[in-house]
Length: 594
Image (cartoon, rainbow, N blue to C red; front, side, top):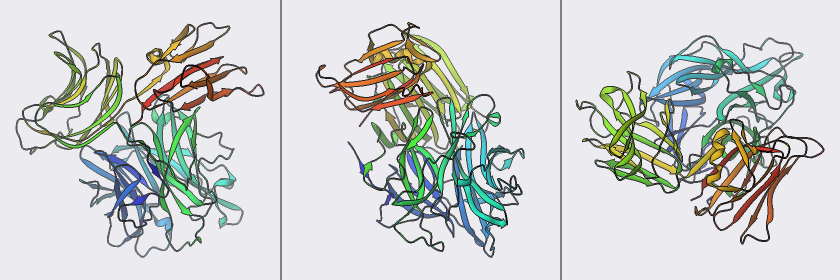
């Protein structure tokens, strides 16, 4: 079912709320938005990113004002908020210092725990990478005295704990373009002040992206751009480069006739756990710009990665399709016995479970529950958590034989009595499991497709939220599984770099979609042209005759793109065939629509 919406997002009480610098946290199946406020940090919540409920201030401190750019990270039962603010009587915004506060509830109230800097420091953005936490932030004292690129820039540093930076910051994005100028001759004649701020990190495949805001947030020309890094080696060793390069201006989102001052964003997954959405602020361009009145409101638009480049239609201001909903979304499941969550008949899905015991942590018998995958008869894969062992074990039960497939060792301070996120991704035989996006394991299931089950042991457990979408994403050598969906007319070769025709001198591809009884679904193919004669075409038909071309790529004027993406939405009532030459497929995805 298609849902339409129109920016800016709406609120359940039909009022208009300003939300500068929106930061989105997804927790227990809900979205929480934290935003800049003069008297405190605003917080709102939503189930679908479109309809929001305002809850007031998550944080307010007597004697403080101008609470800028909050960002919240949930970890082991505690919500950590990183934000900046001023003393009540301060007149210079460069006295904005960064703090960290904590709470046991996403709505707050948050309590300040520590001041992180004793200097101008804004726009915190914490991220977890391989179990470690890093903090992106912006300061003035790296290039502030330079002649040609003076201004605010973005650094990153490792958090030794949630309250302490290592003290070894690394510059990530520095000023280099005239379009980034906040004001000419701002502090002294001949020194034009640039601003690079509002870091937002996310990943796709083997690349990492850092979206940032540039220019002046008080101006109409505030815009979003981004830098890219290859995910090779230690996180702090990654080399970031603006797209397309450090000396060519590029706008991901900029002002339109109807929206201006577009900037400071978060990227979050849609409710279907698959699609990326950009959440940012902007002003109505038809209103008079009043620097003394807050006019920035929250907006959302879908974000795509096409051939390694970020693409969005933002800023939209007319009716648009809303974020896709999942196939299943259930809340507050009170589980005392086996609970069948999903009967899998396709072999692929991505799912998340937020789980928390519903009994008092003083219960001396501990915590014990399991998630069962491919559960059918006496065969199953059991993901078993036992608090006394501080571990999660993956067991295969097949024909009365038990085999340990994998295990996850949990840290000694793991709190079993608070909500934790379990992510399960199934791609036919390959299954990946992650706890809190930190502790991961992958294994192969030899079993036929079966049900996904939650099983508490003896004592009740609450599944705070269960979400599932039938989705598969194939990449590199996993593209060999494309034959689950398509029949190939010619031999192909799949390896770690992708899938291509097996004849090195021809490399012709021709394949036709099988009869997939999935209802409505969407597909995407990523590919790399191999020479200037490369092309790829997608045709559709309702009868197997009278094929019409729906999307295509062809190298033009001898220029060959490094990578490309084609997308189409034709469900089971259509037939699809794809033809191409001199291309290598590097990715494929299919998402069932609900």
